[in-house]
Length: 195
Image (cartoon, rainbow, N blue to C red):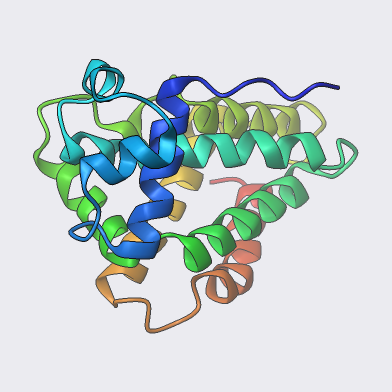
């Protein structure tokens, strides 16, 4: 199957985050991003007001990773195993390729922005995917019907956001992936027992 061609906006976002990781947010200029993404200044400003506007795009970059992971995930896994797989892989990617200071900037900007809060945008692929997995888990009896899909999605996404927030707050002084690998099975066990 042919890989879909990246849009200019997607190229700008991916290039920006690669540069942020390599050079830091302050050490990356808009011209660096334009050069790396092979776009023009006009194209950049068509999509973004400036470099700060790229902070909100981390959520959508993570959605791209979720789409990649979904394509490789065994569809026969249980709902819990799918959530464990996705959480492990995404947290590993965050821990190894996202500058923790940028994650902290994203979280702080979400508290004060007047724009859409990307971490709560229900139209994101992330929310669609997690909702589908949890709904499938309820339909096959893995999660009891007494717990609504909406409640379980809210708890799961709150778990992930709170752990990312704590990891950034603690400046990464523990392994995000290992900690979640240890904690998430207990959270999902509660899902199985009803909330």
